[in-house]
Length: 457
Image 1 (cartoon, rainbow, N blue to C red):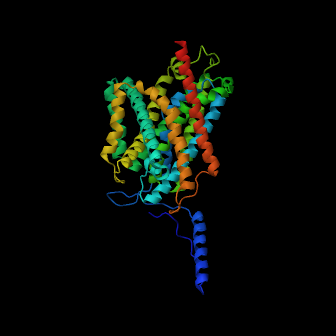
Image 2 (image 1 turned 180 degrees about the vertical axis):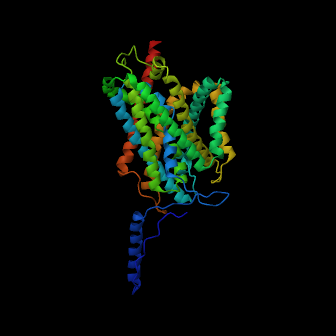
Image 3 (image 1 turned 135 degrees about the vertical axis):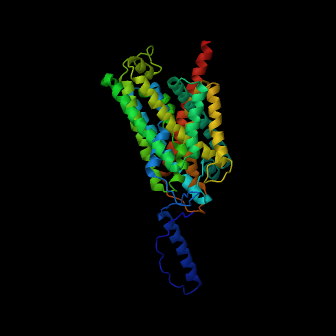
């Protein structure tokens, strides 16, 4: 792989007159090279080649933006109003923007470490396990592996369960048939489809999401109460952060993104920022419309468990639009999570990169299908646990810890990219501290609820 730009001209050297001058010249040359390394910018690390034609197939920036946006816009958006109704729109909007900034930062940190790892190992397709092993050792590998696998399988189970329920209601076929159709259709696309085909399908799905979302907002906003949007209860914000953070998860496709874009840091940064900005806007508008149509949030007795249920009952047009929007959103997320988990498993099994291997896709697709058919409701509690602990560990603490090790403790044998996130150790400390605070506060809250239940019994 070509890691550094070689376009800068070398200065002409003067011939040394004696040994001392020669040593001084060598020292100056070393210092100059070290200083120039900091100014170098990484170009494309490698070229993505078509295995049949051996022609270069560079990743498309627009497809990468759609991949990030589609992965982010999942079923989590449907749960945001339910967990933010107590805090109100203004407070939840601040929480959404804060979580978006946090998740953009951690995604850029993953991209930084990923490109450095690709440059050092000399290959693309480097997943979190290779990054964690290189920067944090065996402990980091264990944390990354188990957190990554748990979160992905839990979310894939939820996606298969919810999509099969929607398809069964519309097609009138058994649940196992609709679940199998969904898994084979989208899983087959990920396995057989080229980068361009997957990007094109993902783009169509995202456009469908935007269209159905627009229709949903137009229909639901007919009964919008603007004064309801002014409510702000910041004390209730911390309890909603895990679910909001879960809704912004896209970091699982960052290694795929870096490989598709051939390590081009400018394109990777643009894809992450713009790809997550689209879901942020959708989340804010969606939450505003839902919370703005509900006026009885102040009473705990009348607290609405599922705000969407009230909208479905009050407006007959809402139900079908919500189901279409949900199916499209689940489809885009399913594609991103399948690609990310299959790439992760292939790296875990030390399989060669560059070709779609059947075994990683079978391991990725089959267990969620079986578990969703056995008893999907069991895993909803696991999803809540994944949002509270797994996401903030895997996509919060771990990226900052890997970046810290990569920047400040690893040996400088290989040239590295400059930091994609400014602020140095202060920023990394804030990321680790913020994620740890939310995890510990949720842990204490859960323990207090358990004590109350025990004392009540």
